[in-house]
Amino acid sequence: MLKRVCSTCHSKKDLDDFPVDPRYRGGHKGQCKTCKSTYGTLWSRNRALERKPLCAVASCERRVALHRTLYCSKEHADIVRNQQRASDWKRRYKNNEEFRQRHRIVARESARRKRALYKQEQQDV
Image (cartoon, rainbow, N blue to C red; front, side, top):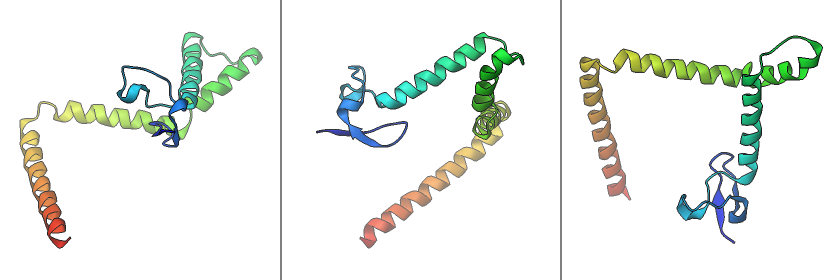
């Protein structure tokens, strides 16, 4: 039986646990059926929350609790913070030619060091 590693949970599973899709390499998606189902459930809950405004009445307590678990967690705050940092970085350095020149020089030096280390490792072996 062929095995494959899920791109989401990184566990090794049988090929039967992955949805068939001819557009993907090997004819199967990279995300297992369990992870896909979990993602779909969370996505639909998020969409439901986006469509309905939150209120604090007793009938909406479950929706408020779900909103807090999804959007008020530390992980969500970290994701938002990282997205903000990335957009700030792009805005600051996108058209800055001086930064781009310095970055190219640093990248070239780093690549040279890596090549030298690789050659040295190959000679040692």
